[in-house]
Length: 293
Ligand code: HSE
Image 1: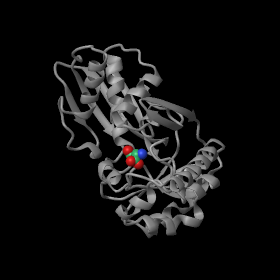
Image 2: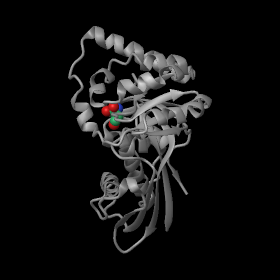
Image 3: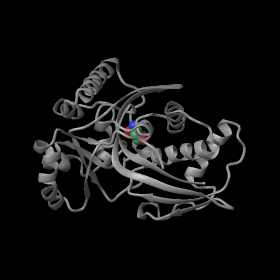
């Protein structure tokens, strides 16, 4: 028994699609699983240097939760090696990749024959919203809604690039959610939802210029969260006229630049030199989600 599970990172919200829209990117968590006498998690990634090494590892906990859900008892012990290019707590879906891996691990070990939809449902129940877990499992862009049952549409994404501007500090999703308002007036909700609706239509039609314009008009979270991200205005000012749009990736603190691929390549060096304190990474959307080989 030996498997390799590969899960893509994700960028969620895309501006106004708060808790609903996410896209899978070509940055991965990869695990190698083999049978063993006891559970062990070994990291080969600088991003995962102090992870729990036994049954307190998050991936194990998720797999156990799935085993309990299907009343399957104990999971056979495994040696798990982890390789990850995804920085933690930066708004690139690292938790979602771990959740997806844990679900897939239980699926394989217990022969559960889970469908993609089952995996998305379980993962969404665990994370509370589908915008990272759904694209991690399905690939592409996923527009989702969750209230007990998760409902979604997946669309393929092409002909656009994402440049991640990754700062060297972490921002916990819990803290980034704590600054959001509890309520919204009716008129604000109508305004915010119309921006989100046009964003969705623009995404489906791959009208990146229109999606970029909508990103800049989000009312759901960016006006509240930008204070947590000191480089927010400076990055927007630097890349603004070269890009379709800029938004907070997931809960931040990474900012994501939506841009034409040729323009990203042309500008990258200049942007890096202007703000060398951040990591600048060109990422491509991927239309394939979690994979087992
Ligand atoms: N939609 C979520 C948020 C993504 O913005 O809080 C991060 O988990």
